[in-house]
Image 1 (cartoon, rainbow, N blue to C red):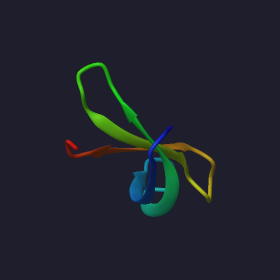
Image 2 (cartoon, rainbow, N blue to C red):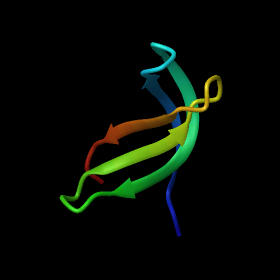
Image 3 (tube, helix red, strand yellow):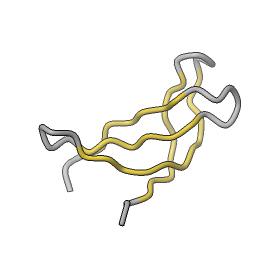
Image 4 (cartoon, rainbow, N blue to C red):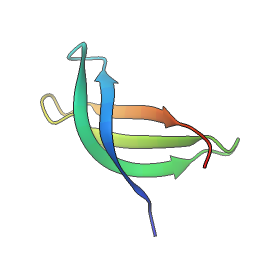
Length: 52
C-alpha cells in the first residue's frame, strides 16, 4: 500500500511553488521522497521528506 502525500513543491519549469498530490517512495539509502505531477505544466515534481 503506497503512502500518499499532499503539499507543495517547487516546479523547475514554472519557477514557482505548486500544490500537488503524489505518492511517497523510499530510496535505497532510506530517504523518503514525494513524487507527483505539476498541475499546470505536467512536469514531474519531487519533494524530499523527513524520516518517518
